[in-house]
Image (tube, rainbow, N blue to C red; front, side, top):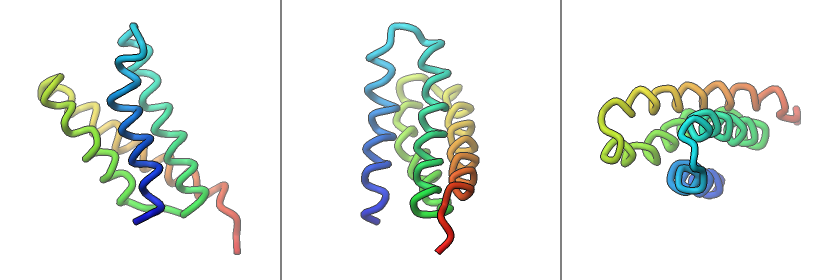
Length: 97
């Protein structure tokens, strides 16, 4: 479980600090999936594939539904898919032991 802690912190920063740091909603909507993809690729390269990482991503993003409404659920599904794709791409960078 220790290996997930840096990624949980990264997800929380991405979801709750980044939107306040940027003035443009379009930049935020494009940047969040890109950052999630990068984080998932790094995790996949270091630790291999984990469905739990995508679930953690969703859990971190769920409180945003209270702010943005149920329409944000579509984005959460997109974040789940992006995280899984990034995690699978990270397997390409994983060193064979």
